[in-house]
Amino acid sequence: MSGTVCCSFSSVFVILNILLCILFVKHSESQLIYESDKEDCDLRERIMKIEEENIRLRQEFERNKILVTFSATAKNDEKQTIRGPNEIVVYKNVLINVGNGYDPTTGIFTVPVSGNYVFFFAVEVQENKHLSIYLSVNNNIIAEALAGKIKDSFNTGSNMVSLFVRKNDRVFIRSHPGNSLTLDIRFTGNSFSGFLHSLT
Figure 1: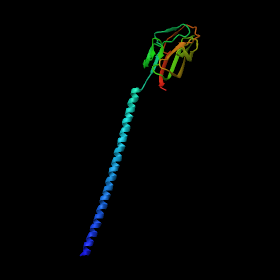
Figure 2: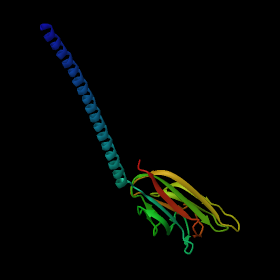
Figure 3: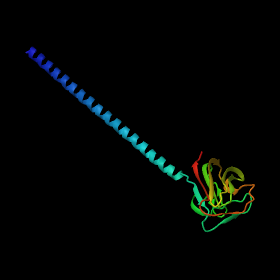
């Protein structure tokens, strides 16, 4: 009888051990699933925060984006007569003026924001005429374009520069300081353009 009881206790002990092992395994599996789900949730949350930050940065960039560009030419049906040196060439035919820096009544581009700008300018002269023009910043000569004399034909000259200018600097095109000719600025071969390339 006692042997039977011992055997029964042994069987119960074995069964309990098996049940405990099963519970431990189930618990471990549940723990792993929980930890995996938690890591997945944490990862998703981090990704959502990164996406939200990217959206915020894009919106901030769009709000703070600064665009400055202008382009103007002489008119085909209206002329400006240059009669001497240091006369500002006035390009009245405005093609674009984002930032409102260019004034078609004076021919002067007033820099709305400091930065690196690119400027392009061109001169066109009638047959048997020649003219040098200068890009000036606050009356300081920066670069020249020359249209030489050609018999019985128009001629053009152009130049392009990239430079740093400060807010409220005045950029314009003027005739050569030694010019003694009288000639007409007319037609779209005469042009003045610029745009903000970068803020630094």
